Amino acid sequence: MYPMRSWSVRNARWLSVIYQGIEVVLKMAHPLMKRVGYERLDKPFVKVEKVTKGFLFDSQSCGQCIMSFTGLSCPMNCPKSIRNGPCGGVRANGMCEVNADMTCVWVLAWEGNKRMHKGEYPIQVVQPPVDDRLRGSSAWLRDIRQKVAQQGPTASGSFENS
Ligand code: SF4
Image (cartoon, rainbow, N blue to C red; front, side, top):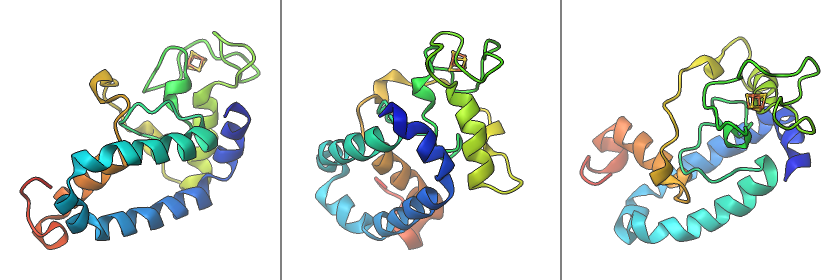
């Protein structure tokens, strides 16, 4: 929802704390989710993500969320789908060059980054191009599986199929 975009970046700090809490719970549930099957869980998770992230961030469900790097501003709302922005056309008043009725998502991203991370700039991490094959899949589940795999066998019980 467009009006929520700027609210969410203004409140990026505590929203990210809530997400970190959800992440802890999902990591703890990893053995169970693995048993049920991540593929089976994908659809219900996508539905929850569409409702919550769609409402709060105007998320476009690309399935490879990088909003923890972009101050909770969804880069897929950029008309050019730029993952490392902004482009060179941001208007002097911070509005988008393509859509003058919309604040540039990267102007919002800098604002959110400042609120989420005092003195740190994850927004400057260079992101890979968007992979359209992942569109419509659960970004949360992908993120959890990657993080559990990185933590090793103590967290996941096994590296296999984590
Ligand atoms: S001004 Fe910002 S939102 Fe608009 S096209 Fe450029 S980077 Fe994307």
